[in-house]
Image 1 (cartoon, rainbow, N blue to C red):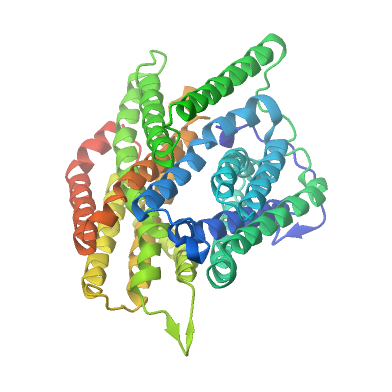
Image 2: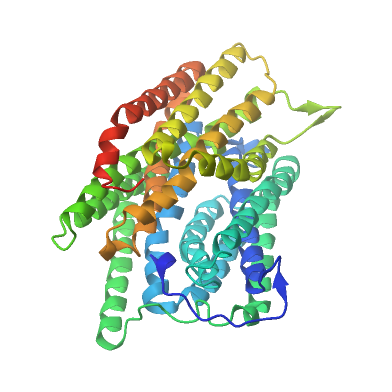
Length: 493
């Protein structure tokens, strides 16, 4: 993907941003507002979908809403693949980020329109825009530094803080507006946030120098025309499929969700098959990709549970928790701010811990820790659900504790997975491997959306305990296979 494009020449400036290139402030704020809009909308999405029509919601069944939420998240990450390709070959990262931001803002404004169809049309636009923006803005951050600059990691750490700052603030604003006043007003707040992001990105473009100004590997002449023709044909095929489904009376929310889930899984299978059967990669590289396949499965299983925070756990927060504080019932979506603030606190601690442990704890073992902690969070949720049996409201501190365990698991798996992705990548596919890492989240969210349908029909304690224990067992399995996976990694720790 675009994340490993050659470093662009940057324009030196006397003004800095915490000792870093001034351009980092532009990209920091763009990402902060994009995450504000994304997590702000996501915090109230399932609650809006399941709210009764009398309460200005859509009145969709909980099982369907959970599947929609999971598929939406999956599509956001799946679209990072074509988004990176478009930047590398056609537009360049800078224009891709700009057009991505414009399309995202348009999607949120569409969702702010108080009609039933607006939510699905808006989500479609947001998926397309995020696919353009998310992978390529990280590329531009990397382009601000020499590849071996000691400030590079620190720059990404500051950028990462912007992500979580936006994710922390967003539910507090959109949640209050959406749950207490009007759902579409909450979506409108997300639209305004993305508009701020686009405006400051345009105003700060002079700081960017040459970062992302041109495609890394541009298509020219006949190759460009051929690629655009294929894109047009693909778009036409998708349109024809949708029309056929509509004429056949099959164009329903559930049909689209199921179809997109299958597409996500098939794309992943095709991606791995392409790499593993490529005769140009060496035996060592193929062995490392087999190790990566194990890590990919572990990561997908992790996100399957983790990303239910915005669906199943969000509904639990709305229906099963006592959120009354001094006579004020705070919005259920406010609990979606717990995760990012814990990441902000925990990320430096996790970085310090892994540095201290060094190679004594291998990558597969760290993945195992993430899976076990993730599973234990759902075991704890089973206890919370059991306490709520009979209609009793439980303390929201149950959910805070669950999110704290999940964040500990995320910090054991997610940044380690990013690092492993770059280290295990075959040379030929180095620029595409980050897209493969995004696919792990896409697969986990897509399948997780289907799994979350069971939360409506199974007893809640049974649901949480079943999948919590499954994750713990998978984590223990990862411990047992850790030595074998390390052997496949062929010298990579």
